Length: 258
Image (cartoon, rainbow, N blue to C red):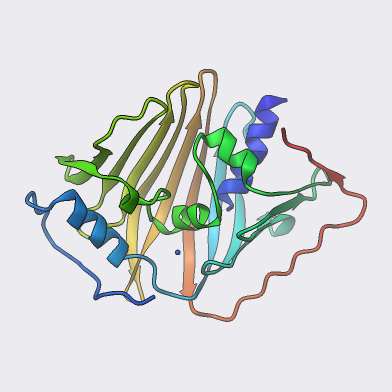
């Protein structure tokens, strides 16, 4: 039952960013950059469009493997994330995420979920909200890097940032790309329960002068199990008009996650 709940959580979360300076595109890693400068560059290069829509290929693997699905993703920055899931061309479910609510239904078992981010936050061991989910999809840090001081070093041609102040509850690190200053990997480990979340961005592409992820790989593990999700972006477009049709069908059973 716990694994089933975690499966729902991961699917919901994953299928689940005014003015800025000029984009920074250094060609070589600069070992002299401070952590403060790297963080500033990361936010300077943040996503700068009002909407985006894309096609996705999504694969989940865990104790209970699920078949690969395709998805349509629509995002209105800071307002709405909408996902429609399909298998072999047939719709199988939808997800709607707003700053205050997460809603989801799936047609195979005729179930649905409606609630806030509290459960996801408890499971991950860090506060989760709309902005963090949005940043995850865009290659941005899911935590606010400006709130802490970080040590910096070069690790496998990345800037590795780790908080200066040790935390008895969490171990956190970020690997930042030295060319586009997007996230290459972000890791959060909940020490007392040994829960770990690792989000890796295997590749980036440039679309309309916007640096955007091509692939995202997520691994969530505890002492007994590891669940993974891979997301491949396809046909990404920016600043198109987007709509978010979402109606939970009648006679579906509500999922209560505790």
